[in-house]
Amino acid sequence: MNDAIIVALLKSLKSPELKPGQYQVDEVVTLHIKGNITKDNEELYTPTVQVPQKLLMACLLERLGAIRECTIDIITKAMSDAIRLNESGSTHLGHFLKDYDDAMERVQDVLGNLPKKTRTGKTKVKATVTEVKTVKV
Image 1 (cartoon, rainbow, N blue to C red):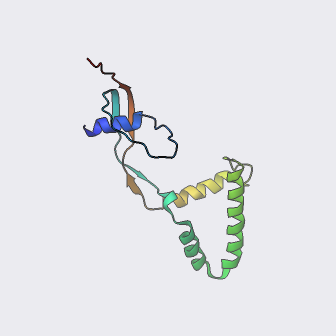
Image 2 (image 1 turned 135 degrees about the horizontal axis):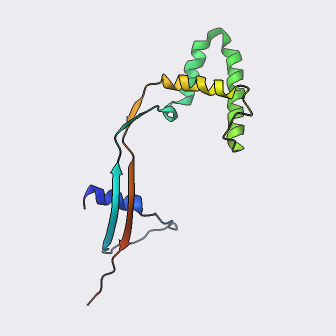
C-alpha cells in the first residue's frame, strides 16, 4: 500500500467510538478509494503556543527589578480576567479593553519579533472510501 492510499484512508474515514475492552481483529477487507490529495508546501509560523508560560513569567519578572511587585499584581489581575473571559466564552475583548485595536496591534508587534518555525504543509483529502463486498462462490 503506498503512502497516498494510507493518507487517503486515514483522512477519509471517521473513527468510531469503541467501548472499553479488547477487540480481536482478523479480517480481509477490500476497499475502493477514489478522490484527490493535495499536499501544500511547508510554511513559516510563529510558535505562540510553544512559549513556556511559567518560564516566560520568570524571565519577565527577573528583568523588571524595582517594578517587579507592581507587575506581579498586574499580571495576576490580567490572568484572572483572561481566565474569566475564556470561561464565559467571550471571543471578542472589545468591550473589555479600553483600546482593543491598540492592544492587539502591540501584541502583533511582539509576536512578529518572535523566531519563526517551519511546519509541514497541510494535507487536504477529498476522497470516498467504500467497502467492496466480495461474493463467495
